[in-house]
Length: 178
Figure 1: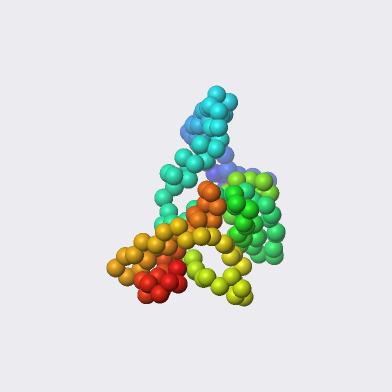
Figure 2 (figure 1 turned 90 degrees about the horizontal axis):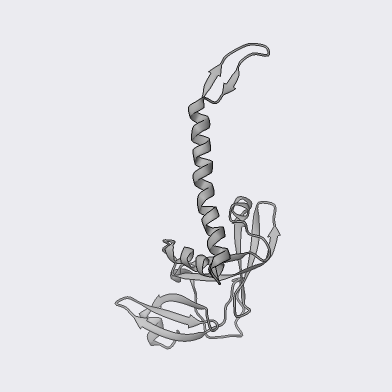
């Protein structure tokens, strides 16, 4: 980039030939993967669904639970947005994200998305009549309890294709609280 200082009506900034070439190269390289994905999508049955799963499997995260679904509602707030995610079995969860995240992730009604939830953030309870202030309350059936030295990992089945895992103390799992 070259700059020229100047007074009234003068001065400015101009991209050099090398900078223009760099931008052209970036645009060309960025375009090729998109073309490949479009060709693969047209040629392979179920490609979009499989590619989404491949992307989820390739993402590294410490969150044990990855709940996939469709965005059913976006409520824009003064500072943040509420994103309602419909899960395959009919249950929903709500996440609060920044306006910037809503835009950059392309979250809009009908789009595919998934929620990442650490197992240590999941609370379990048996009493279905209890009143809680927690907004996201999912119903499931205990599928497994794996005890460790200090904690137990409890996996709930929410529906035919969705599970969620929680970590609780061994003390609670031994007393039948899982």
